[in-house]
Image (tube, rainbow, N blue to C red):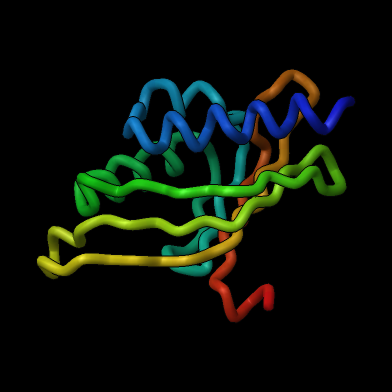
Length: 123
């Protein structure tokens, strides 16, 4: 399939994340999806992913991701570097976190897995 389509789906995922649209995000995931973050751990299944995202947005109620370049990669994937900014409500501190995210899609557009890397893991 065309990597341009996967890139559009990844842009949609980031836009929904920036809106904190949990319902919109939830329907993007395959039921058996895996979400692995070098920052927050691994979550298996759409229910666990939804719970993690609910908790994340409660902790970082102003979280925002800035992405400048989306790249098609193997296995129906899209890779992008990001800067996440927000306020950690638990610590009362501003956060600026860089990383690289790889999103892998099924042919029907559902996300099968995501891996978020810390900068030291991909440089």
